[in-house]
Length: 478
Image 1 (cartoon, one colour):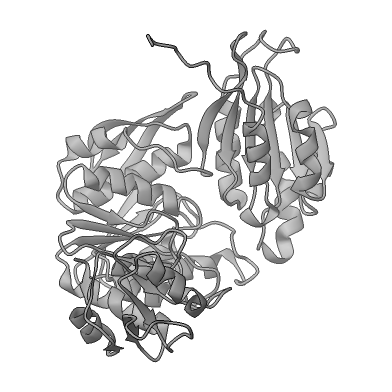
Image 2 (spheres, rainbow, N blue to C red; image 1 turned 180 degrees about the horizontal axis):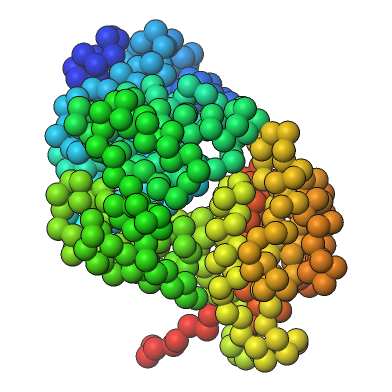
């Protein structure tokens, strides 16, 4: 059992109406499993409105701040003054009782991918706990901690932010033994005065470091000195990664292929060769940070590098797939789904993957396969957003992309900055482009879809997937 009623009462100071034991913690009745403790958080909807449904679906109890109407007299409830604070208390109690070594991950780009790499690499040498989704905010971090099994050997906690002052309290709750800052880039500039302000906020993840903790820092970014100064201030052992000559974990060669990236590096001066099963220089660099974490935990370095090759990106974050247009003729196009989020750094990284990809010639109505980008607005960039969108036209190697379609009012600046031959369609909303999906692609093409979540270019990913025909299934003996 993950939590008994006595343990939960001790952690939260609440009162329970019945004895219970929970095997999990849920905040959503849609994904709730029988045996879970349902937490009635108040966000867009008030979780108290779903308590009855949660109990009917098999929740053993509900964490509430009031007794909802319509419940049976025997309903098991853990009653507290504030549900979110009680969830935080559960998270702290779970952290205090575990012997797991904890790594906290933040950064403007690559948090979730790095978390998933760590899940694979640490999971090869112990029992690892990490959130299934990108639970990195004020309720996601305590929820992840509250779900941590007592017997975990490792835990990976992703920590994000939208505004100043968010990271430090979450890090203090998680108390990581190691932290990773993947990079600092223009993102959420609406809430920060400068990139330096973002760097200071990211550096605040070190405020929660356990005594003698390790900070794994990107050596290639302009704000590295801010991160290093913070590490010195909290007496953390700083370990650096990147292509810089001074990096402790140094990239020396990155070969980006169609389906993978092969990396040569030095690891504290010793050569290492590893592969990640997705194209992208950013994946190569974050993989090096993961190896630094594994070393900080004293894991077998050969196994760590080998296990890194088993990682693949999660949906919406660079997943690459083949869409069959005609199963008889065996014609297809490739789709790169990177539509979960976007800022200038992640946009450049995704475009680099497209630039290095190789289309297929001679299989479509056009003689030559094309590289096509469908790019949506990058949101929350503040007063410089127009210039940052137009600057995408200056991405090194962008001439290799044949057509760039632009979605959203901010992307109109890029559309205007592109050479006429590269300029595809511009639309205000993704919905306007959906009916054109079949006309935008041809067999042999490679299509990247990238944009911030709020601009909904993910609907274009769905539309492109629907163009595919199911593969013919083999028929056996009846």
